[in-house]
Length: 421
Image 1 (cartoon, one colour):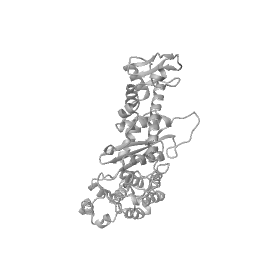
Image 2: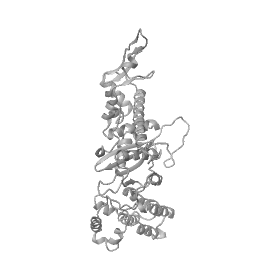
Image 3: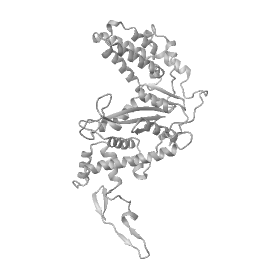
Image 4: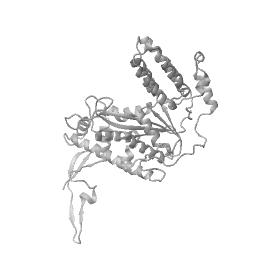
């Protein structure tokens, strides 16, 4: 039977040989000399997988990738569109199976449950290390508050904010976010629509882990899967017993999932993304207030100013003190006050963090969302199956981590923050 190969010189069928030994037994080059293939399987060379999968369909559409491959090899129609789609799905499945084995190995310790949740608890009485010195924090607070702002805001108010200031690059900074793309219809019948947009979505959870200048990107088909991968990555990097710092956009389900996952372990902190906090301020003006744009802008700027300094109580009081004649939808104001109250422990003095050179947002995972998912999958007219979306995201994440060559040569990944490798 022919042995099918898809490679850099084209797609060809090579003859195989079968030898029957006199003493018994059979030598078959299709299985004893080359990799065993399924009935209609194709052997894909390293060149094909590198150019076609990791540097092809992760950047371009499948159609353009196929056209480019066949044009370079001067063999029109050699590799079909569906063949490339299946190849990408199979390659991503191989990566996911390897990661699953690696994660199972790392989390096989009794200190973790099957879902990757830590069963141990860090001693809450042990003084937390890796924080900014008190005198450094005090100096930053002094400098972040201009003289003209001290008439109504005091240094003592800023110093009273309970959110700690971490030392740069000491504890892992973990940013998590969900990104959705338009989902293909399984058939012409109406499917279950997304609750927010009214459209069906294929969701991917993206995690960006950073420490000491080293970074690693993870993707999961759900928040639970992504958190399990994150837990294993911390173990592989020798960081399972250090304090953790998370950055999110304030999505309640995501925040609750993070704290529930590491509830037993403790020593985790979360910083609310400043951009999304500003977005809530804009919602106050566009939805909750009435009057001229200039009048709304006064309230928005004052609220942003208070929250920039981490003064949640003052911000809630300000919203409550807006004159009734300026309010269009009181429910919106109540929702924003509830949002601020729920996120009170995660709203720091952003001004002081900025002065200390610390992060104030989850923009790094937003960037990963663009690179890993959006740039390739959010284009006009595109829709994706969940499997297809996750496959492209998985391959892009491997490339993003600089591990595609290791995977192609050794069929394994470092799965570790580079400075801990």
